[in-house]
Image 1 (spheres, rainbow, N blue to C red):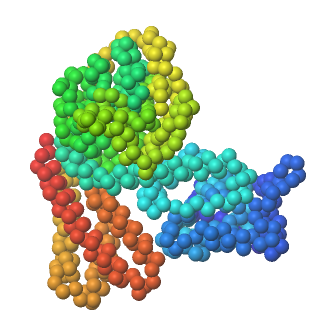
Image 2 (cartoon, rainbow, N blue to C red):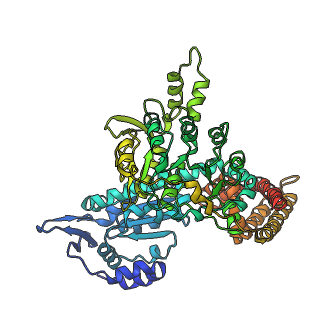
Image 3 (cartoon, rainbow, N blue to C red):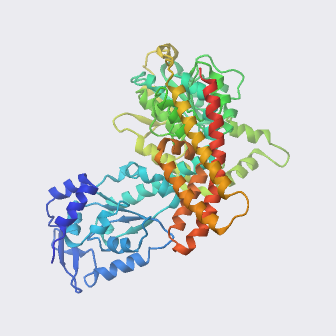
Length: 618
C-alpha cells in the first residue's frame, strides 16, 4: 500500500510547523497495529500488554463505517464540527468532502503515533490544505479555553457538533472525557461572554465615552503589582452565606486586606467594616444601587472597569484605579494614551477580585460569600441591593419568602442541580457553574486559596474551612498595617498629546465611511427600487465591505458598538453561502439593505462621541 506520510508532511509543515516537528520525531508505537480490513483498506487496533487487542475501526469496511458516522452527525445547517479522536481519519476525510467552503473543522487526538499512522495511510492533502481545518494533538485538556480563543465568537454564535470516535474515546476514556468536559465548559463561557456583549455593547460604549476623562487620568492596576506580598486578603462576595460570618471579618480587620465586590459593599458598611478596595465591572444601572450610600469612606479605593456607569466612577475623585478592558473602544483609548494593566479574566466581578489579589501577591486568599448557588430561594445576602429591593416590595400578600421565590423562578430556564459543600442538594445556574469552573482553573496550587464561605458549592482547589479557623490560622499573627499608607505611592498618569492626534485621525476615517454610506444610499436606496439597481447595490456593497475590512482598527470600533448587528450579518452570510446562486441575490439584498441602515446609525454615534471626547480632553 502507498505510504502518504511524506506528501502529507510537506503540507503540514506549512500549515503547522510545530505539529510537523512533533510528528517527524515520533516513533511508531507498538500499542497500535495497522492491518487490512475485509474490504482491503487499512484498519487500526489497540494492542494491550496481555496480548489482547481492540479494533478501533471496522474489521470489514472502515470507509462505510465512517460514512455512517458522518451521516448521523452532518447537517447542511451546521458550520462547526469538532472531531474527538482521529484514528486513521476516515471520518474526517468523509466529512471534509461534504462541508462548504465556510465550514470549520477542529480535530483533537491524544496520540502523536496514531496521527502519524493516519498520515501514512491516507491522502490528507485536501484536508491539510484547508485553512479552516485545525489539528490539536496531545494537548492538555485544561488549556482548551486558550487553544480555542480565536474561535470563541464563531463557536459561541454558531455552536458546534461534536463527532466522537467512540472506540478511541473508550480506550483513552479519562483523557477524552476530560477534554469533552473542558470543551463544553469553554463553549458555555464563550456563550456567556458573547451574550453579555450582545446585550450590553451599546451600554459599554456609552459608559466608556462618559468615563473617557477618568480613563486617561486614572492610575492603572500596573501600579498595584506585588504591592502586598504575603499579606492575607479576604474577598467578600454577596452570597447568602455572608450573613452567618460577616462579623468575623471585623475582628481581624487590622491584619488583612479586604476586597469587596460592589454588591457586598452595603452589607459590610452596615456592619461597620470598611474595605480597602471595592471592585465594579458591570455596566448596568443596578451597579449604581450598590453605591447608594450616605458617604464613601475616606480610605476606600475603587478598582473599576471603564464600562461601569459614570455616576459610580465619579464618586471616588482621585481614589480610583482602572483596569484595562477587552472592549474595543476602551482598549483603543489606552492603546493611544497609556496602558493601565489587564486582569486576565473578568467573567464575574468575583473573578476580577481574585485576580487582583493574585496580582498584588496577597496570600492566603480567603473567599467569603462565594456561594455560587441558591440558599433556599435566595442568591444574595441581607442588606445587599437585591435583598433590599425585595424588602421594599413587602406587602400583605407579598412576604419576603414569596418575593424571594418569585425572583428564584426567573432563573428556571438556566437552572441546574448541584451539591453544596455539605453534600446536600442545591440549585445553581449555568452562569454560576461556569464561574465555579473558572475558579477551579485559576486557583494556583502553589499558593493558598481558602473557601471560607461556609455554604454554597465546593470550589475545586480551594481549602474548605470556617472563616474563624482561617483567620486564627493565617491572620492572627500578622502585624498591623495600613493599606492606605502603602497606596500613597500610587502616581497619577503623565499627560501626552498622542490621544488627541489619534482621535483626529479616527474621525477622518469615520467621516470617509459616512460619506461612502451616503453615496450608496442616494444611488440605490432612495426612490424606486429597480431589479438592475438591486444587482448594482449588492456589487457595490461587496466592494464597500472589502474596503472596510482593510482597516481592522476602525472595523473593530464599529463592531464593538453594535455587536448584535454584526453577529446577525455574519449569521445571515453563512446561511446565504450555503444557497444556490439563484437564491442568493434576494437574500443578499435584504441583508445589506438592513445592515447599511444600522451601520449609518453606528457611524453617526461614533462621529459625535469622538468629537465630544476630543473636546473634553484634559
